[in-house]
Image 1 (cartoon, rainbow, N blue to C red):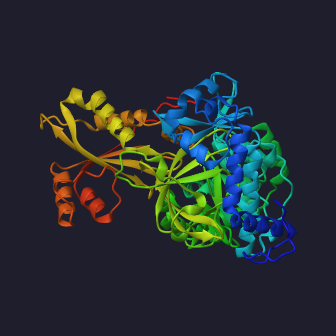
Image 2: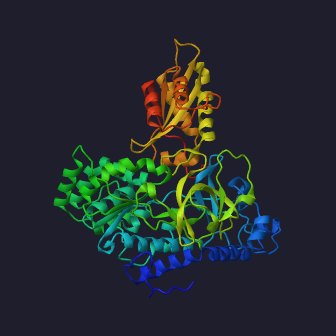
Length: 596
């Protein structure tokens, strides 16, 4: 698509010629959303016409929307799992895509306790990079002078595995950080990081975090923005500083690196950066040695203009804590993406977190939207609407068709239409469908939580003549890292011999062992979730909970115990009835190779 960057952008005056081209691309693409979408679908169907999947559905080379919708079904991951497993096992025939599958991107969502494997192709890196290239031009409209300093971003690679057929399976951001797109990215004065590539790419999470924090302290006056992918990640960095500031200050004072940093490339890189700085060491000691850490971000990095973190959806629970540590700095949510596809960006990134809306970029994939009806038990594919035909105020489930071979795939995200930019809709992310608990990248649904409770009962409680009468849960994010809290009301057959503290601690561990691999990775490898906690409540507590709900208008005939709670009066009622608290005594089992 040709771009005339000489014309003024309706979004605002660009900071430079490069930004002008990006802003005009956004304008032209969103003005012609319907035509762009029609072209994207035709491209996808044309290039993949001879794939096994499309031939099975007898598309016959057709590339029009009517044929596509009438012949290709709307699917979930489970529907596609046999094809994905064949590719993972080494089948290189064109099953889903005419282009070779280059790797699998592991989703934070799970299926039967395993991470979902999303097939991707090499050119998708270019498509993802194209969306990244739009972020700073938009941010520069809102925050001038970002070329005068650096960004302190806590970015990490995670473990990767190989499928039986030899394809890599790893998170989408790990794939991106390890790609040449990131490692050899051209210098951009508007997008300079304090962290060297060696720190970001170090596979050891402690060494990576330590050196990224150290570089951020050394460059503290140049830092204009702080960020992480999720709000929870930035809070984890603050907690890391609380635990390790004395060693960091000692390194700065002496100009030598801690012996805990053993990665050869990282050591070599840091030795070139680190020089003795007594004044900075004393400053870090003075600030971090105080008991009160309110506003610590702006105290250490005084020129910070905003925080660049996702605080929508489940991450909204971290906003008060971020406000506390940052002194109320603005929080920018810049883009909307997943392992399956990158979707769009926030054209007003400095808005309040509650007002965040993402503009879907029509060139990224072919998008359809299923009107969301939470109580509907059946899917009517004729009700799906195109990108440009959604209605403001309505909620939809996102359905995508991608260049990499996902066709009418239900992502599981629930979105509410807030408006349009030109002819492209803008959406507020409401929630992940069916997700009950989430602290970091984990997503635990009701069925998984029920299974974990059942397993803990079978493994521990049954032998003690005890059982769980009722339970509920919540994600406690006041601790860093956050952790799952499960409220249990127990039925004990012999009141003289209730389950011991040790037995209930083993119940915590048994529940963790039963949760999905993403949760266990967060616990074991990423240290982004704390030990699971069980709070035993008095007998009759859940009857009180029902009475409270009925007093507020709930029907006694339709009342069901909520499996997750976050309403303050209910939390206060539950906590006032707690008789004992128990924590998981050790880490659950997890290895990169263990997919279950």
